[in-house]
Amino acid sequence: MLKEKVVSEPIFPQAKAKKNKKLGDDALYGWLFASPWVIGLLVFFLIPLVSSLYFSLTTYGILQPGEFVGFQNYKDLMSDTVFWKSIYNTVYFVVFFVPLSIFFGVGLAMLLNMKVKGMSVYRTIFFLPTLVPSVAMAVLWMWLLNPGFGLVNGMLDVIGIQGPAWLGSETWSKPSLIMMSLWGIGQSVVIYLAGLNDIPQDYYEAGDIDGANWFDKMRSITLPLLTPVIFFNLVMGIIGAFQQFTLPYTMTGGRGTPADSMKFYVMYLYDNGFKFFKMGYASAMAWILFVIVIALTGIIFYTSKKWVHYQGE
Image (cartoon, rainbow, N blue to C red):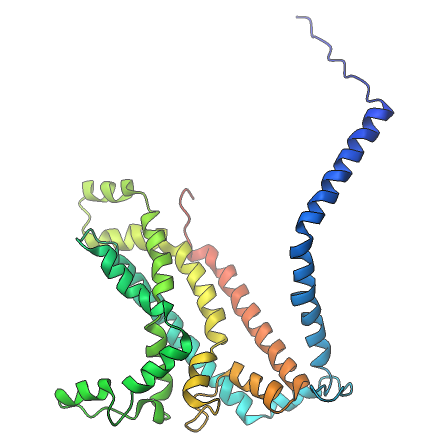
């Protein structure tokens, strides 16, 4: 058989130059359109990030330039009792709130995914707390958990249980905050609902044919195919929980009472930076928090290969 020879047309210098000019113009227009985002990234993220790293090595205060002290701020933090107390409070909140938010979020999403008349109303009711501003939610829960005339202790008295002091108790203050935060998980419930609706019904029909009951289908179909959404909410939940600030700050007036049991990490960081004007000290705290969050996120991403299951894999 005869093979046809493919003759490529020579590229003339003029055509090549014209093509290169067009590619250069396209790149220029692309950078022009992306320039607002790039400028915003540099001005509001990259430059402050690098600046805070330098400030963490100085005694910089808002009212004074400060001087370079190396890692002295980090050394002082290691002997700061309030710093370690704030870490304990924050880790306590993360360890309990994040798993509970996933458990209740998935459970509520599965209930709200049922084919029941008026389900849109129920979904709206569970989502409404997410729309309440954090300060308003703090004021509302301060009234509900008031040990003297609060609705929660009033309901406990009806069944013969003497309610604790809640926010006034060192033992119950953090559990109270966790309960308040769980009240506003409607946003994650919506994400779980989207994940549930994304699961093909063919899997459930195959399970029915095999004689699987509700629990079997939940264990073998729903939860494995929902793990990508759980993975997303886990990462975002940890990042958000480590930055807990508004609720405890509003309820305690920034004091973190009682006995610093509500003094969270970001609250103490804010106090050092904007109350005590120790911006270098606060910058060191910010970088420690950054490293902790990055490390935990990296661990979650590394282990996700073993427990996150994507459709088609």
